[in-house]
Amino acid sequence: MIVRLMGEGQYRVSDDLRDRLSELDDLAGAAAEAEDEAELDGHLDRMWELVRGEGEMLPDDELTPSDAVIPPSDLTLEETQRLMSPEGFIPDIPAE
Image (cartoon, rainbow, N blue to C red; front, side):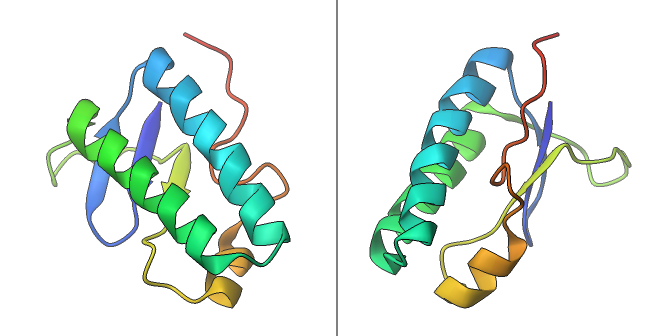
């Protein structure tokens, strides 16, 4: 799965990492629905940390469609809510 960190770049993530991101995504979705911006920002920060720490950054010249886009936590609650799909940020993609 290819994940784009908005404004930073793309990363290839393992199935295990995708599953952990999906769990955080569910929590982020609940926080967005509850309009709890601090909680939402914390989940987004953890998602970024996981992708940066365990994902494989793709070279800038490798053009690959992203399966998921995770926004930074410095957006407003409203901006982040507009970026969320009904599935959240991490779509349900079958394991490879």
